[in-house]
Image (tube, rainbow, N blue to C red; front, top):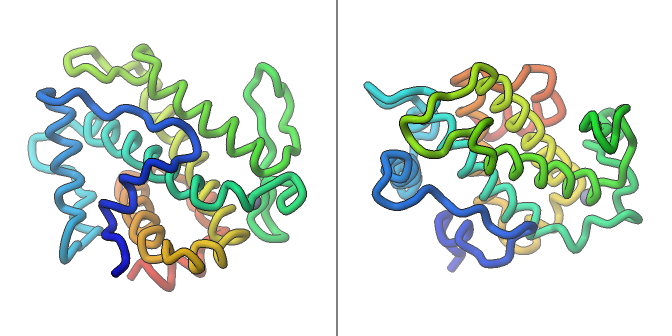
Length: 217
Ligand SMILES: [Zn+2]
């Protein structure tokens, strides 16, 4: 029998070390549990992404960013050994899309990098943002910075590119190990979430438009 969605994402094998979840007993932890509990059965993902009444959208978005980061970490971990400088010399999504890395520091200008290197920098960057209390306050009661939503948009936009690369270049591997249904569920959840709160530009979603039309009704 195939592993359930939840057990699939509890794998030890991740690309980067797993980001710790929210401390138990905190309000964020409860939100995270609630957001996850709804994923177990008979899921209407379009419904579960909606902001629960009386919740702060900033908190709701924070728990989702961390959960998506953790799941995408697992997803890329599954194909990472097949994604090399040789198989993927650029961070692409088919022939039409290519992403260049720019962090304003080491890479001051958008720079062409092999996909594994790009994704490694991307995941490291997201993790750094998540771990920075000034950017992404994890304890409740600490105010969210003014550019919080902007940072979340950037994190989710970058994370989406991992889906683009994995789906377009490593789809056969996902199918081969039986991960496709789990990845599809995660993708749908992500897609409904970012569209519900307008967190990723339409043009960024373009590379997977066909997939989206097929699986997100
Ligand atoms: Zn690759």
